[in-house]
Length: 62
Image 1 (cartoon, one colour):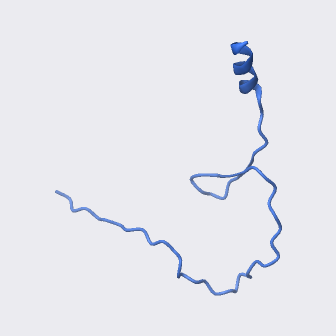
Image 2 (cartoon, helix red, strand yellow):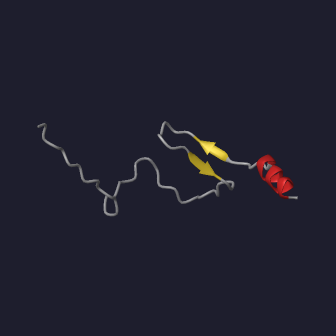
């Protein structure tokens, strides 16, 4: 009985939609994307108010 559960879990298949946009970690989508009509155009200004800026610490060579 225990072996049947393990076998069932191993044979389950998932339907994932992987998106590769030249990034290190691909995006995994489990549902179909929703269509958003309110997308800004390419000429829209970019606001940097809520953007995280990483801290870069450059170490000296010893």
